[in-house]
Image (cartoon, rainbow, N blue to C red; front, side):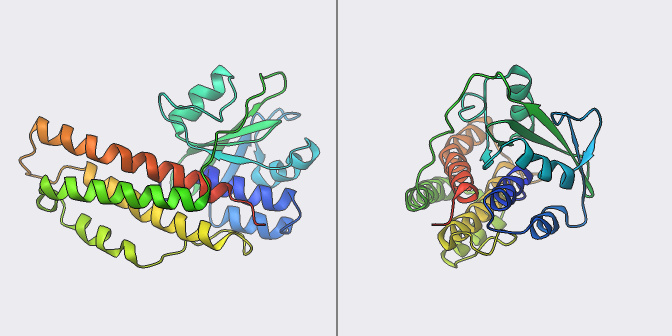
Length: 245
């Protein structure tokens, strides 16, 4: 969950559509050194560059895109289009507007393919309820504390010694880079913490080579990490979808 392509598209497309940033600045921030192609965009018969799709969003009447991070059992914010729900669950992310949704597929370090799903005729769906930034920051604090105590009891440091160091470093403010200049400072801070905690989750879920991890220990670890994973997901969505006042 460290690089959320749909989050970057949602935040920069929204900034462009709302007049908070220029087209060139949005496109530069989105492309970097990566090739992006969009298939299925309404009114097109073949793959188009992401820049073309960005311009088309305004023509389609979009006002903003929202990041959604669906998981099995929680697809709130994803319109009930079977192909979209399936694709978003497989990808784990989507940028959803009123007219179109965009789902990324990572093709490697230098290419991303986007599938556009036309939402014309789809049942209207309210966006997923997003906690305010202070609430999700507090949720992160509680989840970190609970998970840390459980993971210490499970002797996770023996499995992966990097985890305690990452947890200890959460006190230092880290702001996520690569977002519009006027993005909410609290959102940047919350996102930076969520990204670091994603690294904790990745490491904690990976059994160290040769570690004697029993099924019961792994189950206890997974139970301990589930609230933290949910908190990270909620915080990430809220941070990307924050609109400057």
